Image (cartoon, rainbow, N blue to C red; front, top):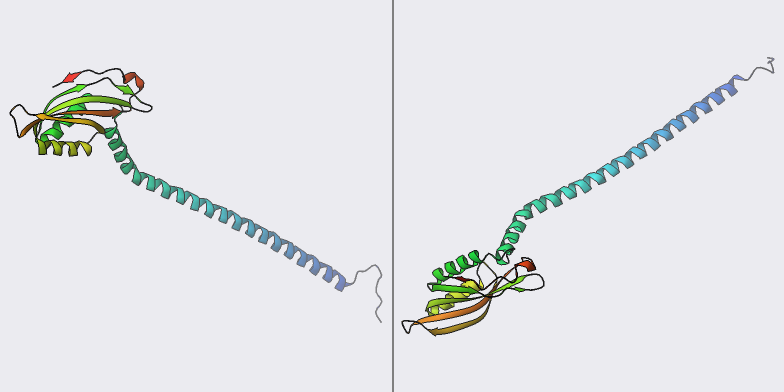
Length: 192
């Protein structure tokens, strides 16, 4: 029979406690690693979502850049139809060019008093043209599709100076611009 010292701790108990502590340490380390892994996965998911947002924004910017040329073309066309300034000289040149293309003579233009509207200036004018009737029709069609917004209010067709088939046409119309109301009030100028 073996006699043990009551102060001596049994060896099996020490081993059990040490194994329990080792298992607890391993479980603690594993759980902290799992938490760190889950945190890292969350950060990766946030970064991927941020990357996807940045990529979508980049695609939006690329589409905007691609549309910029179209938008600039539309803006320039809009400014040509409804320019920011009266540009009477450009209007006269446009009328001359369109009448030349239509085969009708552009004789004169008289600008009337400008009228301020809510967001634009109306510039009434009277133009005189001479030629054949079918050339007048071509001119009217060209002005409708022309480079500047015009409203034709009246067309008076009179006998031309050489008689038929020559005609003289007096066109009462308005051109428009977006200039401020300070531009209104000018007018009554003749150009030939």
